[in-house]
Image 1 (cartoon, helix red, strand yellow):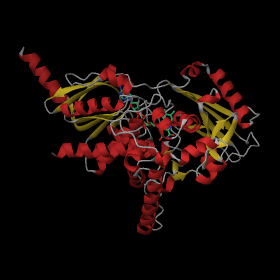
Image 2: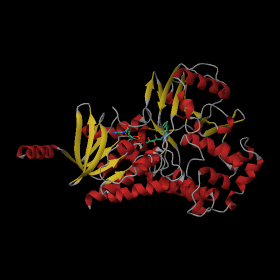
Image 3: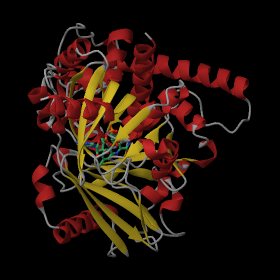
Image 4: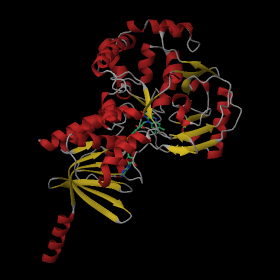
Amino acid sequence: MIEASTDSAARENSVERRDVVIIGAGVSGLTTAHFLRRQGIDDVLLIEGAPQAGGTIQTRDLDGFLFEPGPNSLLDNSPALKQLINQLGLDERVAVAADAAKKRYVVRDGYLQPLPMSPASLLKSKLFSWGTKWRLAREPFVAAAPSDAEETLEQFVLRRLGKEFLQYAIDPFVAGTFAGRPEDLCVRSAFRRLWDLEQHHGSLIRGAMAMAKQRKAAAKAAGSAQGDEGEIQAGPSGKMLSFEGGLQTLVQALVEPCGADLRTSLAYLGIRRSDDGYRVTSMDMEGAHEVDARVVLLTLPAHTYPSLEFGDIDMPLIEIGAIPYPPVTAVYFGYNKRPTEQPLDGFGFLTPRLENRRILGTLWNSVAFPDRAPEGGLAMTTYVGGMRQPENTQWSDEEIVDVVYEELRDLMGIQLRPDVHAVHRWEQAIPQYVMGHQQLMEKVDAAEVEAPGLFIGGNFRGGVSLGDCVTRGEQVAGQIATFLRD
Ligand SMILES: Cc1cc2nc3c(=O)[nH]c(=O)nc-3n(C[C@H](O)[C@H](O)[C@H](O)COP(=O)(O)OP(=O)(O)OC[C@H]3O[C@@H](n4cnc5c(N)ncnc54)[C@H](O)[C@@H]3O)c2cc1C
């Protein structure tokens, strides 16, 4: 008896102790660790199940072609992102998308039509009928919904902008951002900025104009304050960015300072309350590992939650686990020489559901970022599946490459097979903020209140874009710092 309790006391003493343990070293976890270090909180352990950090950021070099199966770029519309880039010393390595990539195309009646970016181009656009153009002009006079109304994105757009705008602008846009469908997504949770524009300005167009004015003023102020220091544009100018060497450059800069405090190939299993916080259990080839921490931050995909242990913490595991994640397959084509005479002067194109294509859309990677392909070549990534056509991800690699080739031949006039190709399958790609998401997040808030020191992050909370993940990483780091100091 005495021997047993001595053993268990010895085991207790040998348990590693940390101030903070972060589970998941995707951009959310890595960014939070960075902002914690900036606040002087260094005793942070990161646990990552995969052999490498970065999560969905997985840049690959294919004989001089750069393939990003996950995110390809980010929007500089978040001050936290600008700060992060600056603090990591990456300003000089930022690659701003070329002007040539400013246009975005949408397929209509089998042809690529530029998405109008200004009132003048809207008038000339073949993407929308005169009825829709007139409808858009009347948008400022459509009454706002009550603030407690729960609407899908589809309902919101039908009410404010009409059916054709839904079908030829919003449906392809949602396929390109969430791999989702407008009828599933909750406008307030998934497109909070749109919802805010209506709530605060009464109209999307009036709101967008007010925001543009604010941005202009902010850019002017930042320009005079910061001069020519070589920084990227301040504030929400919405420029499309990446880095020399792709997004992996950002991951490397975030990983480097972590040193041995980042442990990979270590699968997190769960937590339970301990005397001074939480005991974290994880597992690798050598067996189980335990760490005691005052603070635990989870940045894991929602679909992993039902298999995790939470002890007596009341977490809505089944509901979190039920957040849909559609499968998406990314198909990369690299050409040493441009395979089409068609001018490629855009970021790529998206396909509306009504067009009955077998792909969601294609990014012209090397048009936006020329170093993605050898000089004179072309790099493209096409996405297949999503909520719209999950069954299309069941095709074999050969079938999916053939389908993409046929679709690009039809839509872009491509007549040559690629010199390089690659297929990457995301079985569970992007969380869908469906109806009820807001209420579920309120339950997660309540679970955090009930378990002080436990923080729930990751891209199923606060937005899926990299910019959103960075913004939230900074906010959570601030909350953790406050908790540790209180
Ligand atoms: C195909 C695709 C294209 C995209 N394109 C863009 C884009 O162009 N621009 C943009 O802004 N956003 C894009 N996104 C969205 C963006 O990439 C993600 O929302 C963001 O990277 C999520 O980061 P995260 O750290 O929250 O999650 P993840 O990147 O999913 O990281 C979670 C980490 O947790 C780890 N993990 C899981 N289970 C365990 C466990 N039990 N123990 C330990 N570790 C575990 C995982 O291995 C992973 O590293 C895209 C996403 C996809 C899938």
